[in-house]
Image (cartoon, rainbow, N blue to C red; front, side, top):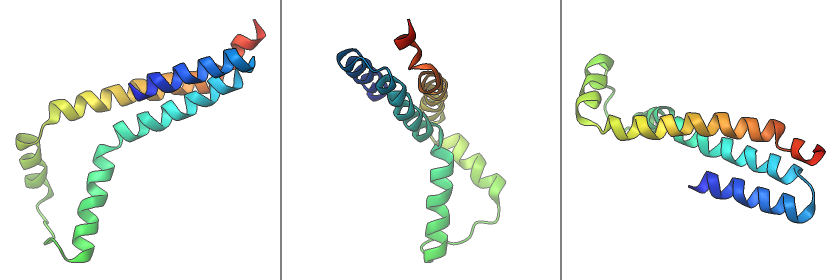
Length: 106
Protein backbone atom coordinates (compact mmCIF):
# COMPACT_ATOMS: atom_id res chain seq x y z
CA UNK A 1 0.00 0.00 0.00
CA UNK A 2 2.85 2.38 0.83
CA UNK A 3 4.41 1.70 -2.56
CA UNK A 4 1.19 2.51 -4.40
CA UNK A 5 0.77 5.72 -2.41
CA UNK A 6 4.35 6.64 -3.31
CA UNK A 7 3.62 6.11 -7.01
CA UNK A 8 0.41 8.13 -6.73
CA UNK A 9 2.21 10.99 -5.00
CA UNK A 10 4.91 10.92 -7.68
CA UNK A 11 2.27 11.03 -10.43
CA UNK A 12 0.43 13.94 -8.77
CA UNK A 13 3.66 15.90 -8.32
CA UNK A 14 4.60 15.21 -11.93
CA UNK A 15 1.24 16.46 -13.20
CA UNK A 16 1.30 19.57 -11.00
CA UNK A 17 4.89 20.51 -11.82
CA UNK A 18 4.84 19.25 -15.43
CA UNK A 19 8.02 17.31 -14.68
CA UNK A 20 7.77 13.51 -14.96
CA UNK A 21 11.12 13.13 -13.27
CA UNK A 22 9.21 13.08 -9.98
CA UNK A 23 7.26 10.02 -11.09
CA UNK A 24 10.53 8.32 -12.07
CA UNK A 25 12.00 9.16 -8.66
CA UNK A 26 9.00 7.60 -6.93
CA UNK A 27 9.94 4.35 -8.68
CA UNK A 28 13.21 4.37 -6.75
CA UNK A 29 11.26 4.50 -3.48
CA UNK A 30 9.10 1.58 -4.64
CA UNK A 31 12.30 -0.39 -5.27
CA UNK A 32 13.36 0.31 -1.67
CA UNK A 33 10.02 -1.10 -0.45
CA UNK A 34 10.54 -4.19 -2.59
CA UNK A 35 14.04 -4.72 -1.24
CA UNK A 36 12.78 -4.55 2.32
CA UNK A 37 10.06 -7.12 1.64
CA UNK A 38 12.34 -9.55 -0.18
CA UNK A 39 15.29 -9.37 2.21
CA UNK A 40 13.67 -11.01 5.25
CA UNK A 41 16.07 -13.97 5.26
CA UNK A 42 19.14 -11.75 5.06
CA UNK A 43 17.89 -9.61 7.95
CA UNK A 44 17.10 -12.70 10.05
CA UNK A 45 20.56 -14.20 9.47
CA UNK A 46 22.19 -10.88 10.37
CA UNK A 47 20.15 -10.81 13.60
CA UNK A 48 21.25 -14.36 14.48
CA UNK A 49 24.88 -13.51 13.73
CA UNK A 50 24.65 -10.48 16.01
CA UNK A 51 23.31 -12.62 18.87
CA UNK A 52 26.16 -15.11 18.40
CA UNK A 53 28.79 -12.34 18.33
CA UNK A 54 27.40 -10.78 21.52
CA UNK A 55 27.38 -14.20 23.20
CA UNK A 56 23.59 -14.17 23.63
CA UNK A 57 23.21 -17.43 21.74
CA UNK A 58 25.14 -20.62 21.38
CA UNK A 59 26.54 -21.46 17.97
CA UNK A 60 24.23 -24.02 16.39
CA UNK A 61 26.33 -26.15 14.07
CA UNK A 62 23.44 -28.27 12.76
CA UNK A 63 22.20 -25.77 10.16
CA UNK A 64 20.00 -28.33 8.38
CA UNK A 65 18.11 -29.19 11.56
CA UNK A 66 17.67 -25.51 12.34
CA UNK A 67 16.29 -24.74 8.88
CA UNK A 68 13.98 -27.77 9.14
CA UNK A 69 12.73 -26.51 12.51
CA UNK A 70 12.09 -23.03 11.12
CA UNK A 71 10.37 -24.49 8.06
CA UNK A 72 7.99 -26.53 10.18
CA UNK A 73 7.23 -23.90 12.81
CA UNK A 74 7.46 -20.52 11.12
CA UNK A 75 4.76 -18.79 9.13
CA UNK A 76 6.34 -19.42 5.73
CA UNK A 77 3.17 -18.77 3.77
CA UNK A 78 2.96 -15.21 5.05
CA UNK A 79 6.68 -14.66 4.51
CA UNK A 80 6.54 -16.07 0.98
CA UNK A 81 3.55 -13.86 0.19
CA UNK A 82 5.41 -10.73 1.31
CA UNK A 83 8.55 -11.77 -0.59
CA UNK A 84 6.45 -12.39 -3.73
CA UNK A 85 4.88 -8.94 -3.34
CA UNK A 86 8.37 -7.50 -2.82
CA UNK A 87 9.56 -9.09 -6.07
CA UNK A 88 6.67 -7.50 -7.97
CA UNK A 89 7.47 -4.15 -6.35
CA UNK A 90 11.10 -4.49 -7.46
CA UNK A 91 9.98 -5.07 -11.04
CA UNK A 92 7.38 -2.29 -11.03
CA UNK A 93 9.66 0.19 -9.28
CA UNK A 94 12.54 -0.50 -11.64
CA UNK A 95 10.33 0.03 -14.69
CA UNK A 96 8.90 3.28 -13.30
CA UNK A 97 12.35 4.44 -12.20
CA UNK A 98 13.81 3.77 -15.63
CA UNK A 99 10.94 4.89 -17.85
CA UNK A 100 8.79 7.12 -15.63
CA UNK A 101 9.93 10.30 -17.33
CA UNK A 102 8.78 9.18 -20.80
CA UNK A 103 5.13 10.34 -20.47
CA UNK A 104 6.55 13.86 -20.55
CA UNK A 105 7.58 13.23 -24.17
CA UNK A 106 4.05 12.37 -25.28
